[in-house]
Image 1 (spheres, rainbow, N blue to C red):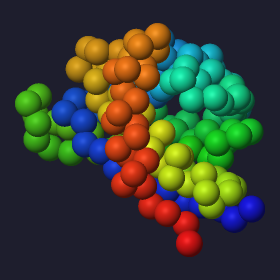
Image 2: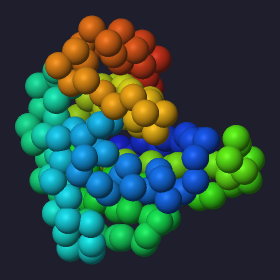
Image 3: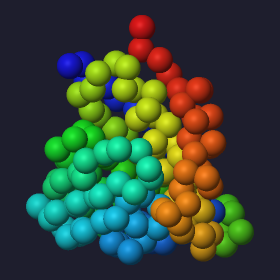
Image 4: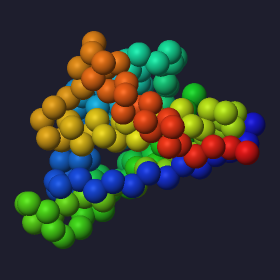
Amino acid sequence: MPTTELVFTRRYDLPVAIVWDALVDDVLVEGWLAVARIDPRVGGRYWLDWQSGQAAEPTNGTVTRFERPGRLVIDTDNIGSLDFTLESVPGGTRGTSTDLCLVIRQDTEPQLIASTYARWQSSLDQLEDLLRGHPVDWSTWQSDRGEAWAAYLREAPRSN
């Protein structure tokens, strides 16, 4: 299978330390991404159990880079490599904001690129909501967020 690289960028109106915690704390990760068990250190476990209503096997990952609070890289058994970079930028309501860049490198079938794109765009929206105090209610994910996910799927890049 070919390796695909998807790059996502977002600006969050909060300091880097707050966004960082939402990447490495079990409870916070569950509020935007999946049920999580995380050992936040190089070599530590990063396990995710997807709850969004889309059939997906749990993800077993290993933290391969842990540079608090700016860089987190996780190698996984079924969703590729997740490379999060956080950068503090001036501005925002608190005087500082965070630019997040997520690079996903994944060996995947070309027809699955669109659903991967939609999943991560939707997840980064969910991270924004969590940071504003509104974690995902996984029991109502389909009715609350399914339409947004479908819109991302329609706009997703397509493989030729």
